[in-house]
Length: 453
Image 1 (tube, rainbow, N blue to C red):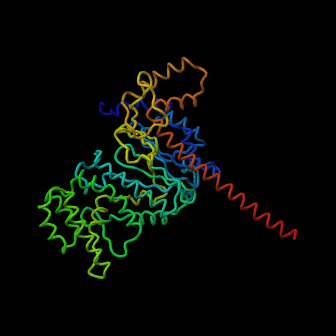
Image 2 (image 1 turned 90 degrees about the horizontal axis):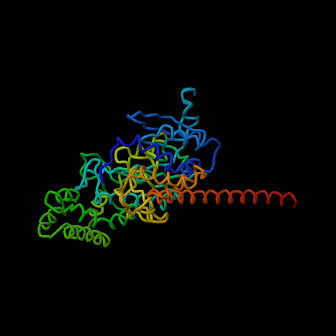
Image 3 (image 1 turned 60 degrees about the horizontal axis):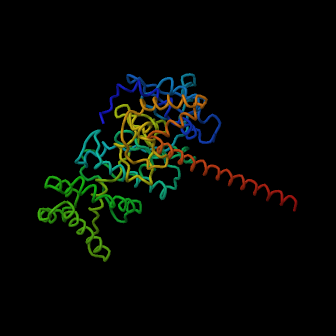
């Protein structure tokens, strides 16, 4: 398929926002079931328009009003900000200091460029199937910790559209967290520390925290295929010297002498790992000091690298799900964690990507979101198919037609995954309301029985 041409966006975006963007589900998400009056109206949106015109502090009275504005302006990118104390589009009329961000989802931004010191296949904004495994590991490690360690329930993971992933933690209580709580959560989830001048960025000591042990278990499942085979991190003297710089001196000399005798990275790693495991067994018997150099290496090469400033700042903006990446044309689609290992960023729908209407047939709504499909011009074929459909049923309403439109494209399974996330969150919210209602009734009943007695 030919490379995406950003010059085509002015032609393609109107079709995307009119017929493909999931406006209904999007409004349900950010409205949170009307948890508070005017909640949606207090949310900031920012638009990047043609020629890099950047417009902040946009807000809308309803999801329908937002939909109309998206179709009017056709932004190249959408960013979502905080819920503010006053409507963002009126911030200039508010007394100085009174306009403040009140709450927002806890967000995480993981970018492949932060791994440039440990990947050998790509650098900068470039990615490939080999290094994308780092994003898979990041999602697995962070999501497990969010659920099992921090007790969070509603996590929306989204592909950024180019070289990273985002996470939106949407729990009601978490959205109200202060910057200090957000920073504490990121600190808990951070192990790789130090800038470009720091050689060893992970340092472990006894006792090793359970979070670290569980993270090592996750990384270890991917380490051989990713680091030893895909990146070949011990494949040459230059590469293994970089790894051995992370090993204590008392073990380094022996490994340097033995590595050339081994056939490949896998055998060299087994030698290093075996030596570290022996130190831990000996320490368990009271002989010597345990060494975790193998764990430190795995974590330095594979552990998630988080941007603390993105997560701790309530007013920080983050790219919206279902926004189009203006350079790649790819849609920022939700990730299905059940099929995460199969996710291929190069098979993600683009604004020009595979539409199966016409001769190719349409993808089943329940088909795996991460399965690659043939590519063609989405918007052009969608318009052609839409013209035919309109002739068949001119009475069909706009919302129904739009739902039919996206179901005929590669976007369908991703919207379905998004809707399933919303349904789970709404079901939990209904359960919470029922529980609170029952608790209030129980308390009131006790009071009445006491008075009657």
